[in-house]
Image (cartoon, rainbow, N blue to C red):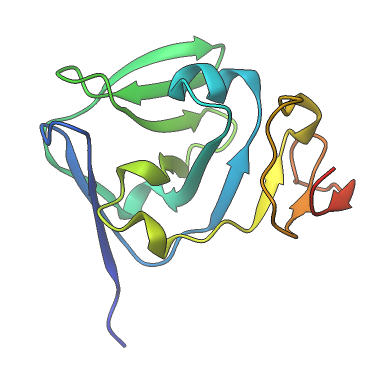
Length: 144
């Protein structure tokens, strides 16, 4: 069985990456931190095993956005690249917009819907979780 390789990059192409296999999850996040990092009303990212991720051109610059949380971006163009947490060191979250084919990563759910902006809505029937989905039940399926 052949392993799938997926590629991505920043806006200017200085940072490029690839990962092997399928994502662990693909989610829309409505939390304030993700909104601020991406300068958008929602951040969509996919979670991949850190061991499957390889930067093929330049390493992104990282900063600690809060204790135990690291966000990365291209030092040349500023494109957000990833999120990682000391709580789950085996996983790296890559922003879907950096994929060479972002249409191939369909989201599974919404997290931190309690922080969703009042004027923003995604019209899908995916489950919405108040905060994290780990050990939680959705508060609803579909829009408000």
